[in-house]
Amino acid sequence: MSDALVEFRGVEKGYQALRPLRLADLRVEPGAIVSIAGVDAQGAEVLVNLMTAALRPDAGDVRLFGRSTADVDDYDAWLSMLDGLGLVTDRAVLLGQCTVAQNLALPLTLEIDPIRADVVPVVEALAAEVGIPASARGALVQSADPAIVQRVRLGRALALGPRLVVAEHPTASLPRDAVPVFARDLARIVTARGAALLAISADREFARALGGTVLTLDPRTGVLARPGLLARLGLG
Picture: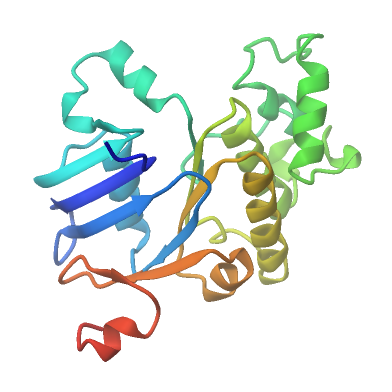
């Protein structure tokens, strides 16, 4: 039995694009850091939705934590499968009129005005872990610096202790000078937690700073390869 946290095998999914999303073979093992280029924003959304069983593939098999998404047939089973998955995505809704700390508290409690007393130290520790200074934690998210907002998204993804963190074009809203710092912090935090990371990003500077395994997807074949290999094989 495979110990991969997530696997795509011969997957194809049509969507509003010139060609379907194809992934011939993707495996993310425990503790790995993997980044994938060659997937645009819409394709990344499809990929993540396939992983979370929000979509079913037209062909192939997607397995999350050893379980095929095709086997998820009720709400409780779906929620159980998603335990251990943390998503860093600009599609995640943040409450702009609430503070940074309140948004970090939301995965833990709905009592955020004020934040429930027993949750406050957890939020403070989470904010410190993801690099949000104390001076920024009381700011409204709608007026916070974009680099802080992305760290709020990271904190939300980490709040429930995931085994696998998936970052969907995580630098799209970041100023360029914040990209390498965020990438290094992301890799350090995920590694320190003993989790794995799958990043979907076309940002080469981000991928270099992140480290780990960097792959590029050939959209025609679904083949994933290290940079330069696709061209040498005549596939790029």
